[in-house]
Length: 140
Image (cartoon, rainbow, N blue to C red):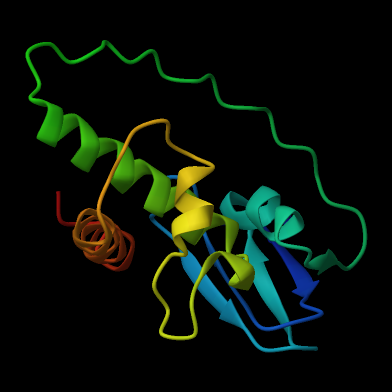
């Protein structure tokens, strides 16, 4: 059961979408809107420029999972996985400057996160998959 210490009100100075790092929670704020935010989203909310009301209870940082490098991945699979991670990062950041007016990631924003060549179709497919995973966290 969640306690009152798990929720804090945040106010957004602009329209923004925030997504937890694990993709399990997401919220959309309108400019000037104040809403209760679960502590899983506090760091993302602050990074997106939202302002908390009052003092936040400090949360112990979770240890970073150690990921084993995947072996025998094709170049195509490595590009797809790297772009998927980059798209999830852009979604979590919620910076509208990272996206076009049509809502697609800007090539320049993606290039800052990856160090390999890719096509616009690669980004489109990765972004569609990232949005699906963010909007449907229970599906893996």
